Image 1 (cartoon, rainbow, N blue to C red):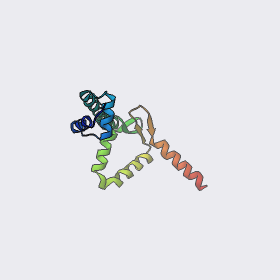
Image 2 (image 1 turned 60 degrees about the vertical axis):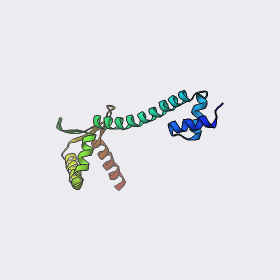
Image 3 (image 1 turned 90 degrees about the vertical axis):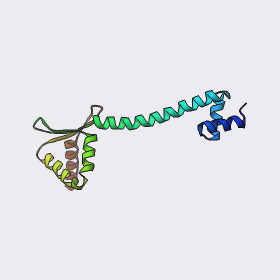
Image 4 (image 1 turned 180 degrees about the vertical axis):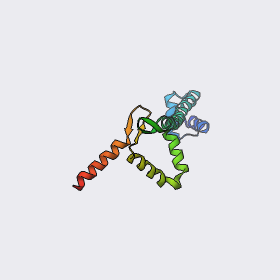
Length: 139
């Protein structure tokens, strides 16, 4: 039987709520040591999952590439992570970057984003489909 003293002791050692203390004590048949170990195992897994999520984001951002090609040769090949940092550092001249990308498109450069999964997003095709749609609406 779980007593209030057991719950208070569990809460003192873990800092959890009454409800959580009761749950872990019941789950471990009133064994205080096993309940604390179980509590730590569950909560350390939650912390590790949060850390791996941030790590996964940076890993994927580093593996995803922004590529500009012209006449079959690569002009620019940067990870999205590096590109994002560069954009943040050069925010005051961001319009110049956008104009440069538009000029690159007009000059026939192929701009794409190669995802970490191997899939490729072709910016040229997206821009082309947008302009085709706009032209059809205007007619």
